[in-house]
Image 1 (cartoon, rainbow, N blue to C red):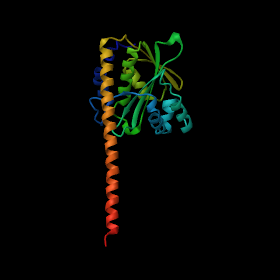
Image 2: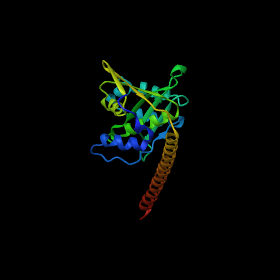
Image 3: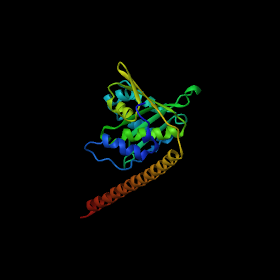
Image 4: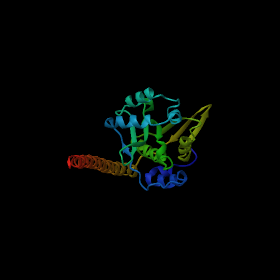
Length: 236
């Protein structure tokens, strides 16, 4: 470990320190709501992963997964065991997601593996970094003391996130392993996660309501246009 992980005590601190490095030309929102996903989001998760191109799938899964393999991965996600987080845009499209996987082995119950994917249209906003900070916060509150990141050595974006967090990275040929030791949770981490969950839920519901409104409005406009066209055709 290169230095104490003081940044992990708060997601706001993580944002300030990391995003100065992660941001280039695109502006970064001060707050990015990150929602915990459940079984009812499986279809959106599948759609998100299928939008990854061949190179992104190669970096995410370690091989150029085809559509069938990607769909099988999404269909086999265990929401009862693992934790999955997502970031939605205004159309409720899942533009970035993180998978925090655990093992059923008792001797490794304090360990978790982190994986992340971000659509190309959402790159440059530091969303991978945000998801990592969120996953770390959740892991600490869950009693996890060691986080692992298994990535291809050419996945420089993922390895950079790990190194910036203070992880030890070991390279073995074309693959790399990152190990990040997490400090114990406290009242600050529990309150931070509670606040994050509340903000994410409110944000999701507002986007859902807006999407429903615009859908209804579009239907109304279509009906009105149909009435106008009908009047026009029936007029002498």
